[in-house]
Image 1 (cartoon, rainbow, N blue to C red):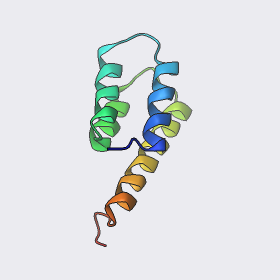
Image 2 (image 1 turned 180 degrees about the vertical axis):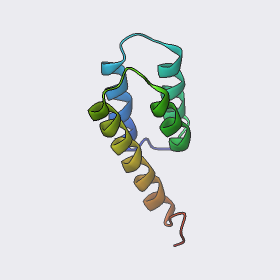
Image 3 (image 1 turned 180 degrees about the horizontal axis):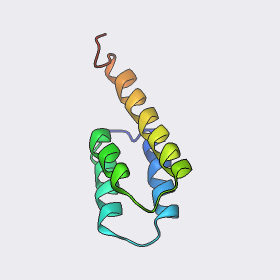
Length: 80
């Protein structure tokens, strides 16, 4: 399984911004590693340390990741 560019970007950003290995960051990294954008999105909403701009940036990366997954699979949730 290849790792998408958006997932790599998300992991790099998380590691830079969240230097302390807190449990929520570790869960978020695990969601990315396990290719689970829905779980990642849920965890991002729980992070209190993010500013609105940071949250928008991370959620945009999650959106890109979901788009990449949909295009790799040849279909979206709405159909082919």
